[in-house]
Length: 75
Image: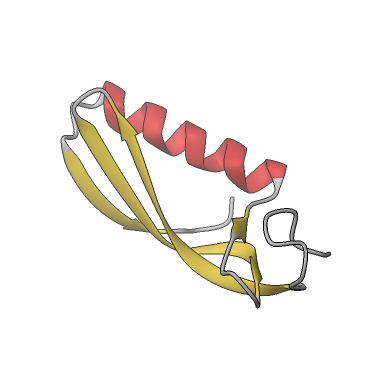
């Protein structure tokens, strides 16, 4: 797909690191599948992966985690 940010680059499959924050908690997830613009580097996550990340941050927040680094594992 053509990048909606720069309007010039094509996105390519890649893995990225996503940092999520909620209240006083920070969760870093490495190896997340994404599409990344070859021109500007903008990252796009699909809906299913975004839902999984939201679930991860909710679980971590409920369990009292303040800072965590995790590897992405497809559900």
